[in-house]
Structures are given as structure tokens and as C-alpha cells.
Length: 146
Image 1 (cartoon, rainbow, N blue to C red):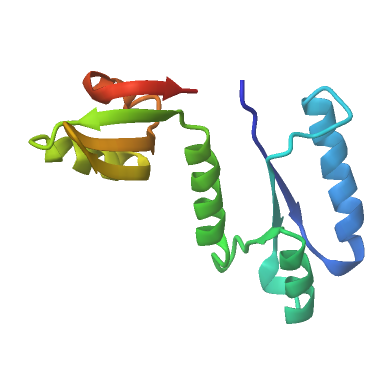
Image 2 (image 1 turned 180 degrees about the vertical axis):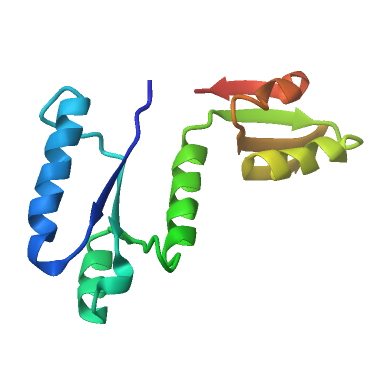
């Protein structure tokens, strides 16, 4: 089973490191071990209170800066979460007859098309498709990799 976590902490320059240690300790207890999942998204709140130099330093370390007051960074956070969720979707290869352009359009709309090639007999597509919509495409699936 895939696991994901988000670590949120308020950022004020004097206590950022201590807050991070506290959050990591709590997450370690929740995940039942000394090592945390690799796919943690580190979120720092109160970005509106930081000076530009401190923001650059935190962003350079891969942390996502947000402000609950101004909304700063929320779009970046949502995009990052969406990308992580999409990456969990299974990859399938499909062969879609040319007369079923509606299916190819639906793959683009509902999944992430990785490769699309026009071949004999139809369009070959390799795509990540969320499990909830995968059954819609069962008739066209050639191979399936979790």
C-alpha cells in the first residue's frame, strides 16, 4: 500500500529547525518507525511573515511555503499533491480503434497520456489512469502494470 504524508509547520526563523524536529518525531510515531516515507511534502505556513531571503532558503530546500491568510503558495501545494496522486495511478497500454476518437479524448481528459502512437489497427496509448475510471477502458487495455 502506498503511503503519503504532509508535514505542516509554522515558520518563524528562530524556531523553524525545532518545529521541524517536533513534526518529524510525531510523524515517526504515526508511521511506526524511525524512517519517514520518502514522499513527504514539507509545507511551511505563515509565509506572509517571512522576509524574501528566508523564503528563498526554505524554497531551495524543497519546502512549499504557504500562507493561510493570503493564500500564497496554495496553488503550488495543490499542484504538488495532484502530481503525487497521479503518480500512484497504474500505467496501462491500450489499443484504441481509429473510429473511437472519443476514447482517446477521454484518456487525455481523465488520465495522463504518456505515449500516443498511431499504429496498424488503431492508436496505441500508454497512460496513467486512476483506478476509479480504469474500468471504463477495459475493452481497450492490452497490458496493465500496477
